[in-house]
Image (cartoon, rainbow, N blue to C red; front, side, top):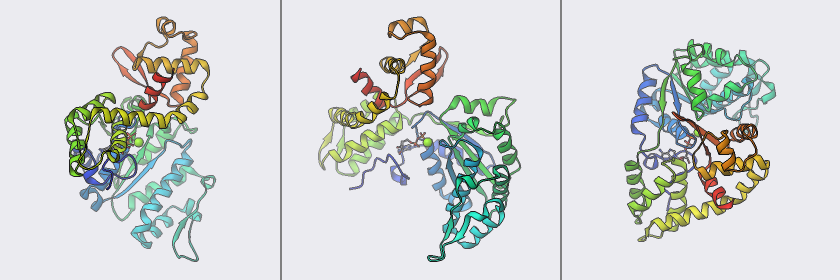
Length: 378
Ligand SMILES: Nc1ncnc2c1ncn2[C@@H]1O[C@H](COP(=O)(O)OP(=O)(O)O)[C@@H](O)[C@H]1O
Ligand SMILES: [Mg+2]
């Protein structure tokens, strides 16, 4: 029996929950020649939504679609490398002609293409270090996209990363390429809402006002309840509304943690049986136990000060004014300045995250399973 709760890979249509309005909105914007800025908290479903959009018949028939995630990249060369590789990968199944046209146009890296003498299959074995002229290659790629056989949609995920690139002019450079294109639409997406909004809503920034902002909130509770209950019942199992609602509230509707829980719970319930709130709790217990080794490895790298702050934030759930004297004192931390330093490290390591509220920045542990583990362990 297939598990209807997907936590990785491409989610087949019937197992993709909701997001109808967002899908329609983004498809309409793209077809209307607009670019999109898609933001949300981590693990809410941006990447899956982009994939889902690319699977829509109206998009699939009309466009070539490309997707890269630049989270791990540190300069323009790497980004350009991923773009080249993605275009190659997408074009391979479209046939030799499409591919040939691509590599004839991207001259600066055409040495990376070859035909495998034995299998006859096209190969792209460019090395990262062989992107000698990233700016030129970027320009060539954009020119290619502009003249490809079909209109294109290019999604760049974790886009905030470009603000960390060595080349400080990347934003301006990319913007000027994007601006010249009429055959290619872009989806920029990422979890760092603060940085992305600054990039797209400050008058002085190259990307100012250049994309339609879509914020992806949690899936509505009603819709998620129906989705989970339906998936159980279609497979001859059942789950109480109470149990699903409990899980939703516990994880505040964050998609990944709920999907992970039901992904694990589903096979544990035999046909004809019913899952309850207690079964949900048992499953979460199991997930935390299984993760505990990884969680302790992560915390083992931290200094006492960093660990202290992480635990204080876990205990608070959502922590405000963490550098105030009262927070420092209440949690037996050393000093506001040491908290300030630890905060930067924890944010950098993505162990914590924050949201802006009218009362200031509100910090929380990024992984909700880890948050529970910390609360229980320390
Ligand atoms: N609409 C959806 N229906 C079912 N599962 C989803 C949906 N959106 C996201 N997920 C699941 O939630 C998790 C996080 O999604 P992802 O797209 O990677 O989040 P993000 O890119 O925002 O960090 C994944 O495990 C994914 O399978
Ligand atoms: Mg993602």
